[in-house]
Image (tube, rainbow over all chains, first blue to last red; front, side, top):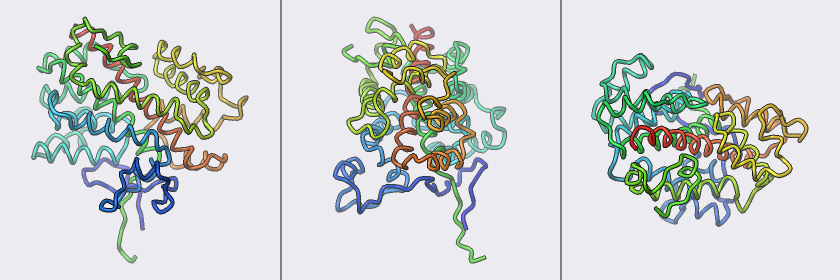
Length: 196
Length: 159
C-alpha cells in the first residue's frame, strides 16, 4: 500500500516518480557520466534517474545545487535550509520541505523552529533573524515575487550582511527550481508494509 | 569582474557597485547558473523542443513573473514561436495547448500541480523524457527569475 502525503512533515517520505525513470542498465554513456555511476557507486535514486532523461541539465544542476547549499562562507548552512524551506512551503513541495526541515533540525540540534513553522505556518513565532529570513524566502518564492525593499530592510535590521543575503537569495531561488522538479514529477508517499 | 551572465546583467550588477565583493565570492555559482541556462535553453540534444520554442516558453514564463526585460531577451530567440511568448496565446494554433497549459501552471501555480497534469501530457503523446525536459526548463527559469529579482532588491539596499 502506498499513501500520498499531503501534510508537511519532517519524516521524509519516499519519492514516487510520475514518469518512468531511466533504466540504469539501458543508460547511455552521457547519462552514466552525468549520474557519476562507477563500479563502486551503482546506487542511484529514482529521482536522479528521472532527471537523467535531461542529461545536459542534470550535469550542471548537481554541482550548482551543492555550491549554493554547502560552499563555505556567507550564510550558515542552517539558515540556507530555512530559505529552502520557505520556498518549499510556498510551492507545497512536501518532499523538499521534509528533507530541508529535517536538515535544519539536525544542524540546529533542535526541532523548535520547524515544529513552529509546520504547526503555525507563516504566523509562527520566530526570532527576528529567522523571521526576516523566512519572510523574504516566502515572498521571493511567490509567482510573481512579492519580495520588496521592506524585506531587505528587515534582513539588514536583523544583522545580515550582503554575503548572507546573497546566499539567502540563491538558496530560496534554488528551491524554486527543485520544487518544480520534485513536486511536479513525483508524489511524496508513505509505503506501508502491512499485509492488510 | 569578468563575469558575464544573464542574471547579473538583468539585475544591473556591475564591478563598481557595492555588491561586487559578495558576487565575486560566489563567482562559481554565477558561472554555473549561466551554464545551466545554456543547458536548458540551448541544449545540444533538444528533443522535440527546439531552441526557438524553448526561448518562447522562457519569455512567456518571464512575462508571467513580471520580468519584462528578461522576457524581451528570450523573445529575441523565439523565431517562429514568437506568439507563444505572449501568455494571452494558449498554444492551440501551434498544436501545443497541453504543453503551454502545463508550463503556465508549473510556473505560476506550482503548489496546485498534480499527477493529472503529468498524465495529461502523457495522454497528449508527450514522452516521459520530454516531460522532464519541460520541467527542467520551467524549474531553471523559476530560479533565474528569482535570482534576478533578489539581486535587484539587493542593489537598492546594499549599494
